[in-house]
View 1 (spheres, one colour):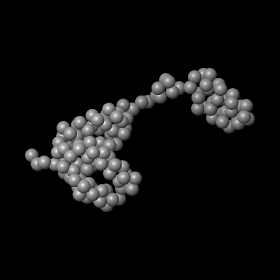
View 2: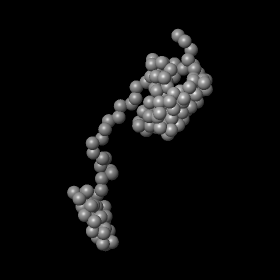
View 3: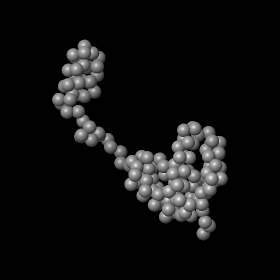
View 4: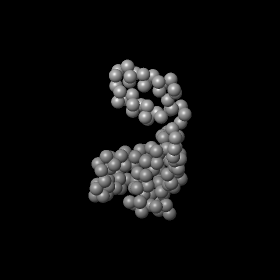
Length: 135
């Protein structure tokens, strides 16, 4: 099996590819930050599927799921560009929450305080909006 390393030249070529694909400048910058963090994690080690999985575990221990998936998308995009499809890793499944957690719900006392404050400030519109939203 061939030895794979991420060189500055490869990263530069990938950046040029992103620019030519006409992605946003912010996306290109984010991908570059994510890839540089990945290279730093590797510390010069040869690139293997095991290393990528270790990096994924490292991300999971330090970041929220959405952030991890975003960072994995960056390196997976690099692997697509290089044709190193066997190194790609799956994103983490994120279960959608239909309702907000109970601890984020307003209590009746909080609701009444908001409505009464809107009334006290003679802000009828805000009072009606609060009543509508909280009903």
